[in-house]
Structures are given as structure tokens and as C-alpha cells.
Image (cartoon, rainbow, N blue to C red; front, side, top):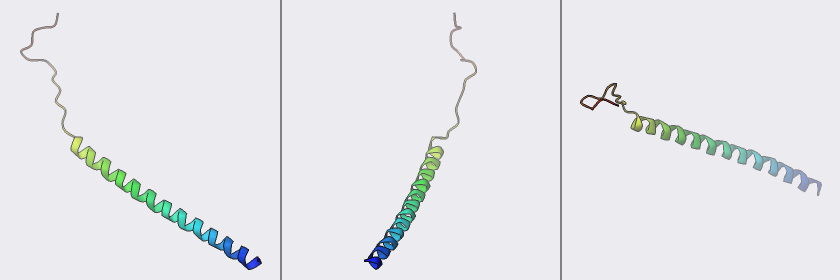
Length: 62
């Protein structure tokens, strides 16, 4: 029984390590995809903004 308890503890510890590693890998992938998405979106959306300082040909405001 003693050996069984030790082995169960070792297995749980290893499982915890493997799950933590998998979570870190998943989080890294998600962060990378998010960075790529926002970088691509910023490139698509980035365009010069035209601002008119005066409206030419418009009637004067009253």
C-alpha cells in the first residue's frame, strides 16, 4: 500500500507539470495569434486621415 501511495503521488505531480506546460504552450499560441491579428488589422486600417481646415465653396455659417 505504501508503494502505491508514493507512485500515485509521483503520477499526480507529473500530471500537474504536464498540464502546466500544456497551458503555457496554449497561452503562448493564443498570444502569438492575437499579436499577429492586431498587427494585420492595424496595417489594414491605417490610412491617412484627410482633414479640411476650411470648407471651400460652402456658404458662411450664420
